[in-house]
Image 1 (cartoon, rainbow, N blue to C red):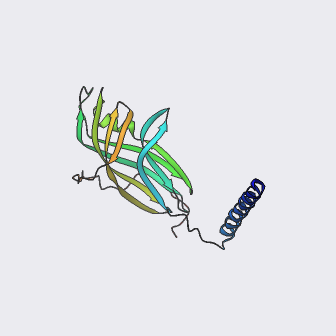
Image 2 (cartoon, helix red, strand yellow):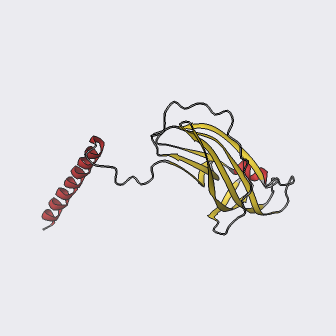
Image 3 (spheres, helix red, strand yellow):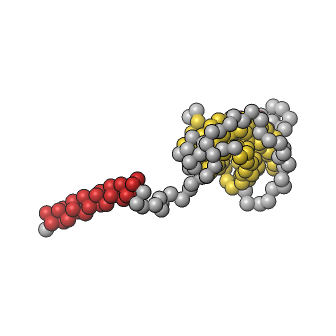
Length: 191
């Protein structure tokens, strides 16, 4: 009885592997569309990454498109700041220059910890704030801006303790309406 169960399990395993290779081949040959790929295009988001051995609040730039994406900068604004023992007066505003090309199918994490820390006035203890931001980038010849969702962030120095999407409406901070500077031309065209 055990031999029959083992043989049947082995046959099912071999058939499953063969079916997986067949689906992979059909997708690569163009016979089967990419039904399981939902997230195509340029998808920036704010989240955690492990940079320099610590949990860092980062801008995660995922390029699922067929085009290269030039990311110029992210402008951040802090509101509802609760901090004690700040080393300097908080500016509540910072611009983080990124100036990097993201090839198709690649992802780039960019730490926002230093910019948030500086905008909060270099707090020496734990602090919380609401992060609002605008990302400026270019796909092909088209410059774009994306207003990112607002996040409530809890940090201790440069280390992130918690990040959560803020559902309450936050007043717009009046991002600068200017075209990004020093953007190199990208040779590929939008499809």
